Length: 85
Image 1 (cartoon, helix red, strand yellow):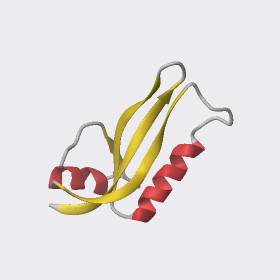
Image 2: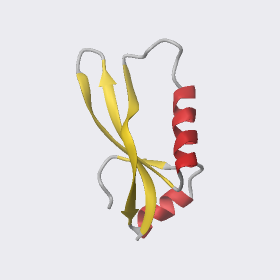
Image 3: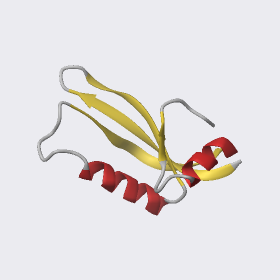
């Protein structure tokens, strides 16, 4: 197993509230920062009726090689919607 940076995400939906929206997994804290910045760049200037946002602090987590391979094949990280560790 390899240690990677894992960030939890929360979905906010107008009229419905919030709910857990998976995690993003990254090689480094810098990759996480870039991933989040690029995510926000895709958002419109006005708050959309549904969006996700990072919640809490990132953690270092040991993840299996299958997930490591996916992260290493990405530019800055991947989103997962079920725990793969």
